[in-house]
Image (cartoon, rainbow, N blue to C red; front, side):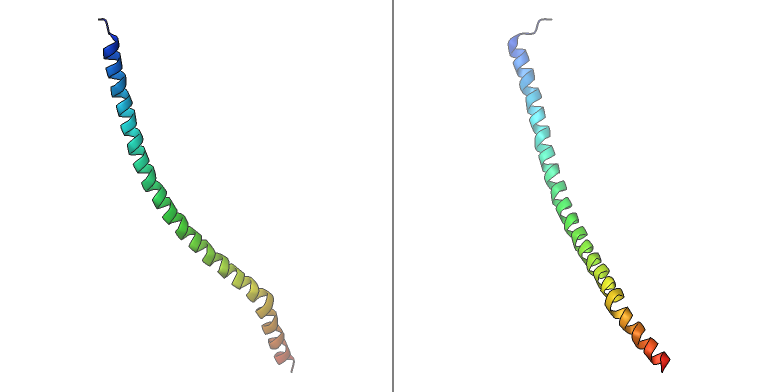
Length: 79
């Protein structure tokens, strides 16, 4: 069976068309994945901000408030 150039060109064009269709499908899928990733990252960033604020508040409480409360209780007990 002998294949001429026209048959080869036709088959290559078919393969190129299939590849282009797959690229188009992948671009659509990647766009949807990217959009969902951006939403998720935004939520995670918000949660991390809240966590950092809580940790900062606990640190400030341990550094400032607890020593003052300890001193007040200590003075009250010593009277």
